[in-house]
Length: 329
Image 1: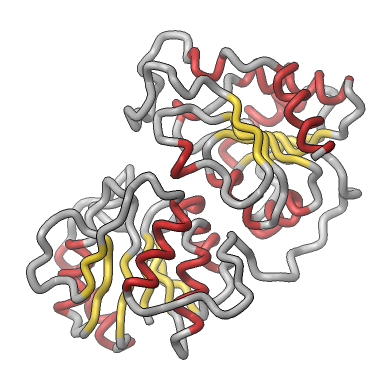
Image 2: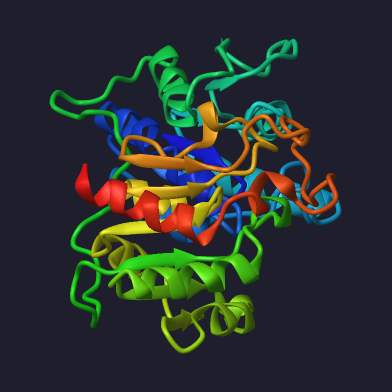
């Protein structure tokens, strides 16, 4: 089986239930991921091999369409000779260009969710209510393709175990200030205030971020938090989140990583995308942010409203109260 999801790490993590269902009915699963999602695919139970490919019609910073690159992907798929492919996409993405490449590579049966007429490109054209949480939406595609979760699998997010060891005694709070989309980020000043407030309330605070976010994490951590910006792989980040009492994070990949290890989330959720689909799945969550703000549903990458009111309305006190609510649940 070939499973494809070609965007970000968080999107890939949400495919976990789909992958486990497919793996339950297959001898081998190869996962085709984008550059930002490959490390997440490596963490999914049921994946035997990960391929990485930069897709010109999915990525936010897409490469130019290159006929030789497409031919090389088709040749690689032809050599693999999968019996079937399942193409997972978000509601605003089309599976049909990839289906065309896979069909020319000889894949006999292809399944995807598509609102567009697929002609002979799809064997299973699945239709779904787009208000479903993303993991349930993806799992419904697996079921339409004929794959069910194994007995006892609750359909929640999950990662391969064991995770790496981390040098921090469990019970801390992780604050992740960055976001892949600027419109979904809580302002850095508010994040720094939250570190101070959490420390005042007796919490140990670890501040995490990617290599490009070291300046941000250093500012946010200040003198009261532990700055781990750029210091972890994705697997090590998962291990850190696994040991946390709670994670404070926007609508970005680490929110789904926290859900995949079962850690409660304080979700600083900008409503540019709907929380019904994209909020942390299957774990205790406190959702903060004005979900009725005028940016609602715009899918904006940059905040379209001066002052970013949907998230600037959230205070450090709100975050401390949410962390303590999760701790007492």
